[in-house]
Length: 530
Image 1 (cartoon, rainbow, N blue to C red):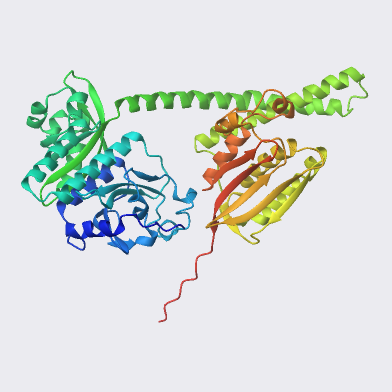
Image 2: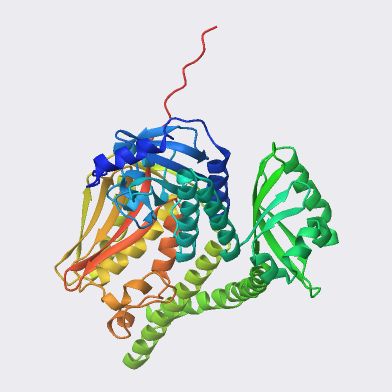
């Protein structure tokens, strides 16, 4: 972990923070509504308005977090106030500054963070508006702009000490509603609109005046009306509102699927909502299901109509090549050998396609159990001993974390290692070695397979895990392979809760790295004495 350094203007910054007079003050709705909106619009479980003083970051407003403050030395916001730009950490596990941070390895299990600094009138950065997720994710330019706009709103609230500044804050809020691509609204819990973003008119075609005069339920499809009324009633009771979808009629009579995220202030009877038009997404989803059905039928045909006879052909060719029908002319033996190898490659291709389809459809069975990875590495190395001899390569096994366990499916784990080892052995020069290593990296276990081959061309790096991807059309195809192995391997590792990546250098070899969370047994529960 790397603690945040102090800004160059730290003394002036702390004075500006004290002048605000907000530290350790009670919660205020003017800030609470902004973090609720940030959480809903950006689809994250936690959103905070933070103020960073000399020793801590204190939360003026918070959603999804119980703590009122955390130490500055472990704070993400301490890093965010070092620049005027939005500070984004897509995956804390992959960032050396935060990988072993106690807020990452323990509660609240921060994995993704985005924070925009908050400025006082003299330009001092005194805190952030930040959003947090417990899973890694990307943060688009549109989302950055939304966070920046909301942070501007927070700044106006921080500094709104005069009527003129309050009016400016209202103008900024209205501008935010007008420019947002999402359908923002403030409504009564009975479904009457009080304030609407311009996106509502762009999407449904009605004027703002018409929408304000029309209750939401009158726009809703008859089949969705009862569910919508129940959703609104839940909000009126002060209960959390789940994500919700229904159809609304446009001015031209067409129906639009809207997806809602909303929060309610039950005391005021106000609903703060953001709706998105997902009509096109629904259409594409229906098309995708149709394509998946066609693909499933095709794979079923491949499985039943091709694999069975191909397996028989492969077996018959093997018997002929082995001399079961007596000696064959030299040319016939050579041709049968070629046909046998090609049938074997076709069987591998069909099996890979079937595995890939099962994995993508969620039909591939996994039986996860805590297993010693060192023992599985030994089993894999032994299984590939003959294959390594075929290429004149040795397998070196290095276990730096003996006894370490992870939740894995033994067969699937060995399938991943088989793919990585076979590739490494094929592309290693004769007389070289392939290193199979197990080590700890923070809270995770890393299994790596390193070769001393030619490396992977830089132009191919981005396509490494794509389906049917192969680095070049000469040597690679001469070595064999379907181009599906690495795509399947990454999918299997991710289904076991891990990740798979690689590092490579030209003429210096390639190392594939599989990382999995280390498993530890639960501490025994103390029995209550009677």
